[in-house]
Length: 355
Ligand SMILES: NC(=O)c1ccc[n+]([C@@H]2O[C@H](COP(=O)([O-])OP(=O)(O)OC[C@H]3O[C@@H](n4cnc5c(N)ncnc54)[C@H](OP(=O)(O)O)[C@@H]3O)[C@@H](O)[C@H]2O)c1
Image 1 (cartoon, rainbow, N blue to C red):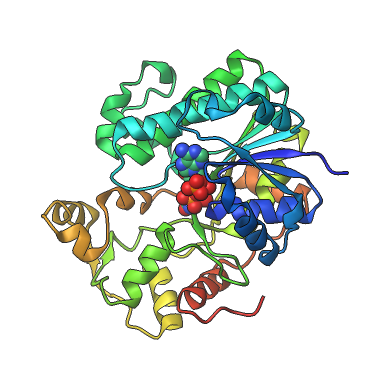
Image 2 (image 1 turned 180 degrees about the horizontal axis):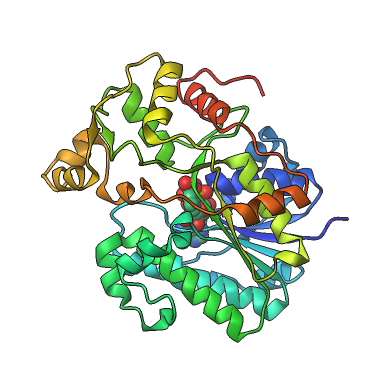
């Protein structure tokens, strides 16, 4: 039998694909669930994504509760996990700092402590902005001594979601080092749908952008020709996570799950517009100007865009050589990101591609 795993955030977009891959490979997986009555629906969804639903069990808990809300029997059930995958997070724009901190920071630290206490390896999901050191410094993060950072200031500059993801990363890394427990971090770029079926959940940021393009709400391209929104397809991300989680060489490593072949934003919008049969915007609008416009009352609702989402559109290019090496070691093949984008647009337009 394959090694058992424990997953938080298993009902989410990335989580569903991770559960499908783990159970496809025969791993029994317990999933932290706030609403365990949703287990049958989750099993069905995981089957549709190519996994084995019967290998899933629910563990009742909540990242926002002390001790993750786990009772003694739940702790007993997750005790066997060889790997704890931590994906769970409150993922929304406009989150209050206090709420974001309780779930995304304190919850992550509690998951890390649980993994360390029971001798499980921790695979934590961060975000690609953590690999952009210039951005972190501009937000006020002290990279040499992160514990000296004024986190309230970071939250004010970045918003509750991003601030809490950044703080969680540094707090978990410090706690795991203190406990001398094994940690691997995967930092995904913005996640694109499945490279063949295009499967994506409607609440995903990329689905929002495609929706705006399809409905003609995107009158201009945010940023300059140098701006891009780095992507990774959800199926390849799940493969990278599983490869990293069971590879001893990846203990202590941080892996950037980002497809360096993602086109610039202009090219990406052109590809998507062609697939959707709509016109692509051709003029650029500087990010600072757009940010200012989004302060006008009612405009974020009208444009269905939030200023917090603009941070992810940037000009920085990243070094993905460590990721390439990991992919090569495990014989993983990057899917074509252009095809993944096309499949995602078809899926959202109700014309799923053939898997
Ligand atoms: N998607 C992206 O583009 C992207 C990019 C970079 C990093 N990430 C990171 O990847 C991870 C997964 O993202 P995703 O896109 O899959 O998110 P998602 O679809 O919004 O899923 C979030 C998951 O977290 C769970 N969750 C939220 N609050 C919880 C709580 N209080 N207690 C227990 N579980 C809770 C949700 O469970 P319920 O079913 O109970 O709501 C759901 O399973 C997150 O850490 C996110 O920051 C995502």
